[in-house]
Image 1 (cartoon, rainbow, N blue to C red):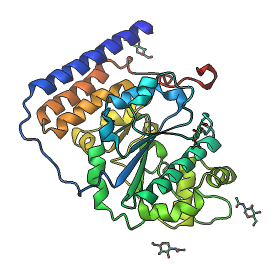
Image 2 (cartoon, rainbow, N blue to C red):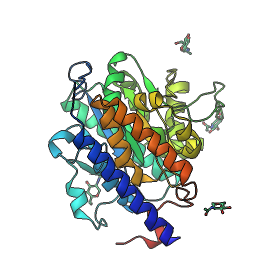
Image 3 (cartoon, rainbow, N blue to C red):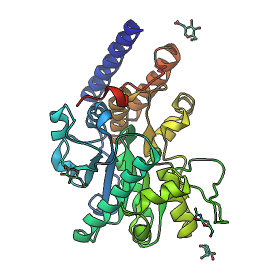
Length: 334
Ligand SMILES: *[C@@H]1O[C@H](CO)[C@@H](O)[C@H](O)[C@H]1NC(C)=O
Ligand SMILES: *[C@@H]1O[C@H](CO)[C@@H](O)[C@H](O)[C@H]1NC(C)=O
Ligand SMILES: *[C@@H]1O[C@H](CO)[C@@H](O)[C@H](O)[C@H]1NC(C)=O
Ligand SMILES: *[C@@H]1O[C@H](CO)[C@@H](O)[C@H](O)[C@H]1NC(C)=O
């Protein structure tokens, strides 16, 4: 098992080097600067949720879609539950802003809803001083986010209208007691964006002193509860973008292989996990996205074929049964 893992790690490093070489050798012909609405970056806040137990994941984010330059993180905020127990202060220093929620570290419903409430509260806090903020998008720490694609998408929507954008979690619609309307919700694990108009309407329902308790009362997970508030209470329908937002719940071993290159390049998020593509793939996927961004179509397609064939040729190496990037609660280091 260990040997297999080492071999696999060596192969990943090899792929990484290979891609870097392709990147260096290829001459950037015409760097296609795609137009996105002016200042969309400064009008969008990006929240990333992590947990003290999962700090190993942060390195992968910094090696991929998240710039390690603090200057480029001006609207990017990391939310964690506890800071004190972090062992690696160097990783922490790579983030411009870290918000410590003090929510408990379990995956229980109350704690997740606590984290969700903190994300909303933070938006209301920061938008007071920055009235130009139009969007709040929140992601998990096990995702690849193609920020450029995100910034292309958002200006297509009017943030003065209520928009709730993401990936529908379940095929069926949910129902709760005392409400006849059914609802769907955007799975938090695929990333979700809220327009300022929707955020303003959600405000009475999502503070730290209300939301976690109501989540429990309705017996809903944090993302389902947000869907309930949005669709049932506020009568705002989710804008489902199934082709652009992806979570690890999709079973990447199925979906990734079925992705075409065209599909890959337009996607906004990918979920990574322990089931097949673990987080050590993030830097490689990022290199692929960078090749596309630089107009290196052929190199990108070659790399894509290589990755798909790699998987076919090493079917057993990429299967994991558990997540290696998070510590189980009982072995937490203090
Ligand atoms: C969490 O606790 C720390 C340490 O006591 C404190 O500095 C921080 O402000 C708290 N966070 C919130 C959101 O209250
Ligand atoms: C549903 O309605 C009943 C009767 O009005 C009330 O006692 C109960 O608390 C409500 N449940 C929820 C989850 O709102
Ligand atoms: C909910 O929204 C729909 C379409 O936007 C509208 O037709 C309907 O009347 C609204 N329902 C309520 C109760 O406001
Ligand atoms: C791969 O896994 C399958 C099922 O677990 C097993 O039957 C097969 O022998 C394995 N192949 C190799 C090359 O280890």
